[in-house]
Image 1 (cartoon, rainbow, N blue to C red):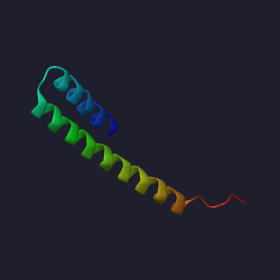
Image 2: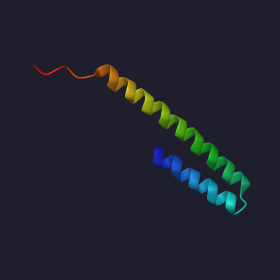
Image 3: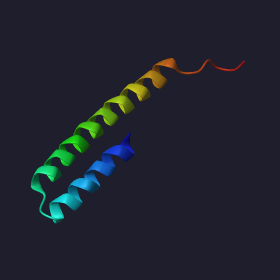
Image 4: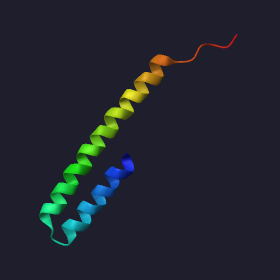
Length: 58
């Protein structure tokens, strides 16, 4: 999912360089949304793994 965010960010940068403001803004917005979804899922995953833990071996 992080690769999608980076892809949209690169598209936004390229569109901005060529002067396509609307496309650049839309791509940057999509990249921002996908990035925050990635961060939320990462935090949920880390918390779930920390809570789950492993039983000690005897």
